[in-house]
Amino acid sequence: MYVLNDLPPQIDPALIAALLEAEPATIGHIRHHGFMTPEIRLLLPGYRRVAGTAVTVRSYAADTSIIHYALGKLRPGDFLVIDRSGDRRHAVCGGGVAFSAKTAGCVGIVIDGPATDVQELREYDMPVWATGLSTVTGKAQFEFGEFCTTVSCGGVSVEPGDAILADENGVLVMKPSEIAQAAAIAVGMQRAEKATLARVAKGEKLSDINGTTARIEAIVRAAKG
Image (cartoon, rainbow, N blue to C red; front, top):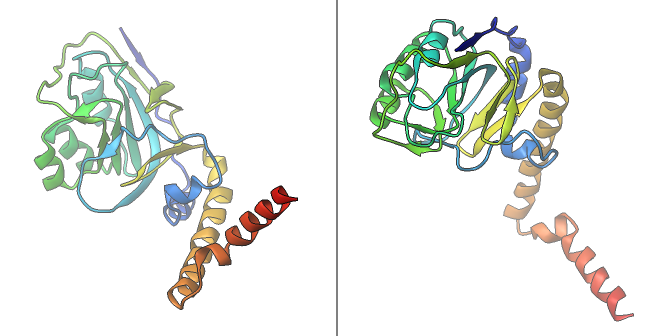
């Protein structure tokens, strides 16, 4: 059985550009939800940061038919999110899927399960986040699949149209309405950190700058009465 919904509206490119200025780990200082499990990791070498509009897919077991369907719907700027319904054996993304997604303008793929053909993923420069690799591949069995439904990926609920921000450290899901504030705070923190590290480079101690030393010493003094 298939469930097929319409594509979601794409997120304003200006918001995506603002989001790309922020590091997911910096946003991790100001919020705790929306972060996929650390087991989902970037399979390409080197640091990169991408952001886009979530287009969601739920596939079952070895059946890859709904993923191929999604490849025919992807738009430039989309981020393909694949819910594997708990399957950890079959790889549903390899060289052909990655190349097709890249050609469609997809900015990234995240899979709650394994991928394959890692060398081809690197050759095509298609950023793929997955739980690992598998030589057991999926097949187009034309039995099940959901397109643009609410899915679960990396322990996070993802709705079509959500914002996906991902880098080598992990994957973050957030609502488009949350982007402006979160990005502004994160960018401000990143700039402040650079200023702080410049002071450390000149000989100051980080614990003195951020007040850690003074606070711990005060706690110890108070405990001694």
